[in-house]
Structures are given as structure tokens and as C-alpha cells.
Length: 225
Ligand SMILES: [Mg+2]
Image 1: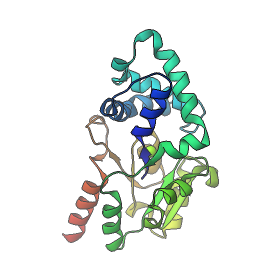
Image 2 (image 1 turned 60 degrees about the vertical axis):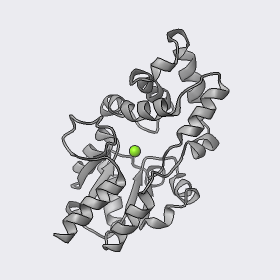
Image 3 (image 1 turned 180 degrees about the vertical axis):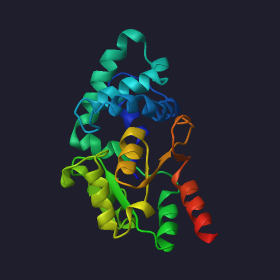
Image 4 (image 1 turned 90 degrees about the vertical axis):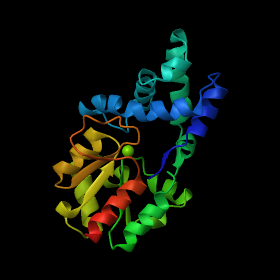
């Protein structure tokens, strides 16, 4: 619902002496997700302090290494992870609203669907969504730090379903990490899909959509049948 602001990451990297192309940064961030997912599947928390370093290493492996000479990669990871880890940086990092998302969500709400955010976060996701101007598009915003359970724990999904007032088996959870979003949602009895703009998750055993607008369109089309 809010994504990495790549322009901000680029600025931070530049201030540390690393010149990164915005397109390469964005592409490697998406391509790194299935790589990060392998680490998360073994039980690592998305909210662990070192997950940002692990993600940056996955981004290097996913193509970003092209922009950074080998001897500088360790320094790059530790400096950029350090710069992105503060609460102020996190607010800027998670601030980009994907094109077309507010309109797509609005159309889904018009159909009578209940929309709930389920986020592994640090208690700040509602503020981040409010700052991005999209909080009011949701019926509820669930933050793992406030619930005391994080994805893929079924407890957070069951809490979200309860807040939605709907049934788990009539609920679709859409996320961007298989072992967190798809595995967790299914454990709680929900259906699950991944947003996969570049086809990085071809091997995944679930529905995939390039973006929220396409997802909204396919739900709209199914409802009209
Ligand atoms: Mg996510």
C-alpha cells in the first residue's frame, strides 16, 4: 500500500558516495524479494534489525551489484542499512503510493468490499498511510507491533478478518512475499495472491497480479459475471 520511495534511497546512497540509477534500484528491489523470501522462509522476522541489510544484499545479488565494485559492497550495505534504519528514514522510505492504487481501492470499496491493511511494522504503519494520504481508503489498518503477532503468524490474519467483519474463506490477502503473505494467509484460511510487476515469482503456487489496478479490474470483472 506504501512502497519504497526509490528517489529517497537514491539520495541516501548518493550522500554515502554511491551513484545508483533509479531504474536499476527499483528493478533490483523487486527482484530481491524472492531471494529475501528464502531467508524469511526459515523463520527470520521481516522486522529484525538486520533484515534491511539482508535485503540490500539480496538487491546486490539481484542486479544492483552491477553499480557497485566488489570491494565496496560490504561498506555499501552497512552504510545504507544504517542510513535507512532510523524511524525518520523509515517514514521517508515507506512513503510511495503505487500509481493507480487509490483509484483501484476506491472502485473495490464501491463494490462493497471491505479493505484491510495487514502490515508487519513497528507501530507506524497507520501514520505512514495517513501521511501518504491513503489511510481513509481502508476499513481497518492492522500493525503487527500493535497486535503482538506478525505475518506469517495466522493470528494477525485472523485478527484482520475479525476487524473486517467478513469470512476468512471469502477474503483475499495480497502481498509481496510468499513465505510471509501467502503462507501466513493460507494458514489462517484466507486466499492469497502476490503483486508481481516483473514476473519475479513465476515459480510461486498462487495467483499473481502485476499491480493493484489489474487486481481491482479482475475482481470487478469477476463480480460482474
Ligand atoms: Mg510487504
